[in-house]
Length: 343
Length: 297
Image (cartoon, rainbow over the protein chains, first blue to last red):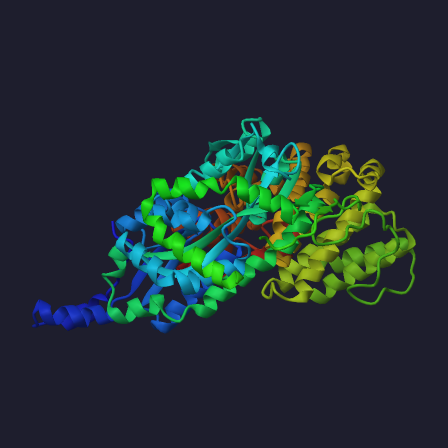
C-alpha cells in the first residue's frame, strides 16, 4: 500500500480528461493532485522532535499551497523505529523520523556516527553532519532507498544504574545492561566488561524493576519519558555515545512526486534544523533538575575518567570496521576533520 | 584529549516534596495573597462562605468565579488551616484556567492559574492530613506519603493532581516528565479510595494517561478506563471530550471521535444539574475539537 493518498477532485479530473488522451490528462491531473505523506516516529507529543516535525509540516503545506500534507504519527503509533524504517524503505510509509541507532539496521555504515567518545561536543557533531559528511551520507542513504530531509539529534547517551556511578571501565564489569540492538552499542558494553541485553523499549522498566538488567544507557530526556528513572539509583553523565536523529523520505514515494514538490520537501531547511537541535539542547539543564527532584544523584566523570572510558571502548572502532568495511572512508573523513578542528 | 570537566556530585535537593520546576507549599499555611481580586473586607465567616458559594454557583461568568475565589481567600485569611476551602479554591483555579484561559495556553495567566491551583491543592492536603504533611516535610516522596491520606482528602488530592498535571504540560516537557509519576500516584490514591469521585474522575484521568503517556502507551487500558468512567457517570461531558481528544485520536478512530463530540453537543446543558458551567465549557471544547478534525485524522 502506498503511503501517498493522492486526491484529485473528481470534477476537475473529468474536466481535464474530457476528450483528451492520457498523455494530456496526466500532467493536468497531477497539477491538481494533493498528496498526503505519512511520517512515522517514536518521538512523543510535546517533545522538541514533535515540534520540529510540526514546523516542517507547516512549511511544506504553506509552500505547496496545500498540495502537500504531512500526517505525523507520533509516539510509535505506526510501530517501533526498526519496523517503520523498513516500511519506509519499501514505500509503505512515506517519511520516517528516528535515530541513527535504528537506521543502522537498514544502513549499517551509519553506525560510525555512534562510535563511543567520537564527538566531544554537539557542535563537533554538527560540523561533521552538516559540512564534512553531508553529501556523502546523502548519497549513501539514497542508494539504500532514502532521501535525507534533515539531521536532528537524540543527544548524548549516558548511564543509568542501580548500584552506583560509573567512574571507571571496571565499574560496569559483570553488570547486565539494557542495550540497543546495534553492533556499536553491544560492543561498547562488552568493551567495558558489561553484559549487554537487547530488550525492547517497552520491556525495559519491568526488566529494571525485576533485576533482569542492572542499568541502561540513554539520554536524560528519554530516561524520564520512559520512567526508567524510577528504577535506578544513579545517573552518570558519561555522554559516551552521541546519537543523531534524522528525518527521511522514502525514495520510492519521493520519486512519484512532481519535481516542484520534491524540491519543497528538501529545500531551505537550515532554520528548522537549527531550531530543532537548539530545542533539544535547551532541555538538558532542565532535565538534570528532574534527577535532583527525583533524588537521583548525577555524577559527571572527570576528564581523566572520560579518557579512561574512551580508551577502554576504542576497540569498538576496529570491530565496526571489520564488520562493516564500508565505514572506513567515513571514519577517515571524520577523524581528519576533527583532527583539523582540534589542531 | 577531552574537554576538562569538573568532577561534581549534583546532590539531590533536600527540600522535601519539591516538585519539578516549582516550589511546593506544604509548609506555608499562611493566609493567601489576594491573587484573583482584591480580598474582600472582613465579614463573618458564615456570610463570607455563603457569598462565595453564591458566586461559585454563577461561575459561568468569569467575574463571578474570580469573586468566589477572592471570598474564599478572605475566609482563609482568618483560618489558613481550612483544608476544605483550600480544596475549593484549587478546583476553582482549575476551572478558571481550563474554562476561560485555555485558548491561550502559552500565556502567563494560564500557567500562573494552574500554579495557584496546585499550590492551593498542596495547602489543602497539608491541612487535611497532618501525617501526610509531616512525612513530606521530613523528606518522604509525595508518591509514598500520599498513601496515608484518607477519603477526607479526596478533593484535595484530585484537584492538586490535575492542576499540577496541566501546569506541567503548560510549563514544558521537562516539567511534564518530572511530575508525571507524582500526578499518577496521587490520582491512583483517589482511584483506590473512591473510583466514583467527581463523576468517575480517576478513571477519566487514566483513560487519557494510557492514551498519551510518551512511552508504554496502552490503548486497550485507555479504553477500559474511559468506558468505566462513562459507566459510572454517563452524563459527564468532559469524559467524552477527553476520550475523543486522546483515545479516539491515538486510535485514529474518526467515527468514534465525531460520535463522542456530537453526543456532547447534543447534551442538555443541565445534564448534570450542578455542572451547567462545566458542561458549557465541554461543549465549547467539543466544537473546537470538531473544527480540527481534518488536522487530527
